[in-house]
Amino acid sequence: MMVYDLIITIFGATGDLTSRKLLPAFAKLYGEKQIPEKTKIIALGRRPYTDESYLETMMQAGKITQGEEILKELVTYFPMEITEEDGYKPLVSMVESLKHQETRELYYLAIGPELFPIVTKYMNQSSLVIQGNANQSIVFEKPFGHDLESARAINEMLWRYFDEKQIYRIDHYLGKEMIQNIMMVRFANRIFEEIWHNRSIKNIKIIAKETEGILGRAGYYDQSGALKDMVQSHLLQMLSLIAMEPPLSYFSDDVKDEKVKVLKHVTFDKDSLIFGQYKGYHDESNIPKDSQTETFVFLKAFVNTPRFKGVPFYLMTGKKLDKKESLIIIEFEETSEQRKWNLPLSTNKLYIKIAPLDGVGLVLNSKVPGLRDDVEEVELEYCIACHAVGNLSEAYEKLIKDITGHHKTLFTRWDEIEFSWSLIDHIKKYQKEPISYQDYEDLKPLIQDLTGELMP
Ligand SMILES: NC(=O)c1ccc[n+]([C@@H]2O[C@H](COP(=O)([O-])OP(=O)(O)OC[C@H]3O[C@@H](n4cnc5c(N)ncnc54)[C@H](OP(=O)(O)O)[C@@H]3O)[C@@H](O)[C@H]2O)c1
Image (tube, rainbow, N blue to C red; front, side):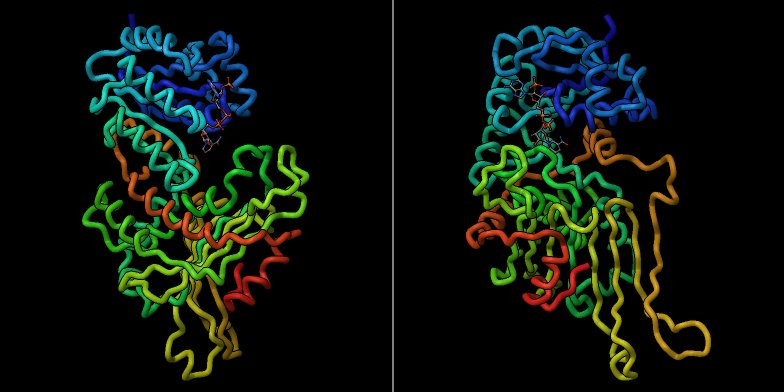
């Protein structure tokens, strides 16, 4: 029988994550020879599919238009009840028959966290995964719990069965091109390195706006809300990359050590907290009529390190806003000449654009061309997508490639999660009834009244 260099076993292979993200990423990586030629994907599900009917269903569900032939070659559907111990013996036999001594094995838990305890227990008891075997990795997705206590419980359970080096916690934001690029922009540019501190930076805005509502995810979203869904993970990850000290190296643990130091020093201004809920949220199916879950959150945070003490970090995220946009804006102080010459006080800004188009923008002051002596803002813009046609990778492709290569920089370490949950739990104590908003225009004046800041 054929043996493989890479075996990827997906738990929850009939779900949304697998159809929309994982299968397209595997097909692309394989097509571009970024994963071994001898790769096998074992898709586990409890429904009675054949290989063909499984792929057909998933192609439709995930609107997958490319890579069908590749997926036909790679994927084997394996019907199994993952919550029953009996199912594991045949799976172990199958995997054993497909691997050699050096085979890289990925076990992707594309299932809700409520299934982790039972599934990881049986993975361990059946010897499907042996604790400490560096060739075997466990991959799973946020949410990493719903508060500090539940996150700790999940983590302790994982550490009971696997070593930390085997565990890959995915926050897919970290796989986005521009998030990876934040460290390059910061540390590989003298012009920024010299001014990256509270004497030059006026404030930092970290924004993730969406136009959609909850898209039928009532069960998850109503228990979570914007603070837990977005701030705990994506926004605090961005904040820590922006505020950290230069790491000793680009290697995983050095970077994470610095990010954790930042997270330990984050405080927030409880008087600036805004919670909002879009009008019509209660009409979404399966949302209780009295739900107080926030679909918008704004907060002013501080990073109390010598570098950033006193600089406000404005964090904002929400649904049903004016546009889909994720970006970070670093606003610099005015120059003393601007004040002396009485020039319009427009400030320099560095835009780190994450979605929908990744890129960097730098706003400068420049003389209006021609006979007038006025000053105007101009933006120097670098758009990654415009220059990298065909080469841009989706977040999941990058993350999966890194797992196969044992690179952990873009994955979350337990202490990052621990300190971010600790902050979120603290903020939660000040949670107020959400303000009802029709659109973003209802929220902007509130933010301005509270902070004096005009958010874009
Ligand atoms: N979808 C995304 O884009 C996304 C993004 C970030 C994180 N995540 C996280 O990734 C995980 C999976 O998300 P998803 O969107 O793919 O969820 P989903 O569409 O609900 O799929 C869940 C999968 O788990 C299986 N499952 C559920 N209960 C089971 C049980 N008792 N026994 C056996 N199998 C069971 C389902 O099988 P059946 O089909 O047989 O029910 C399905 O294959 C979740 O933790 C989610 O929060 C998802």
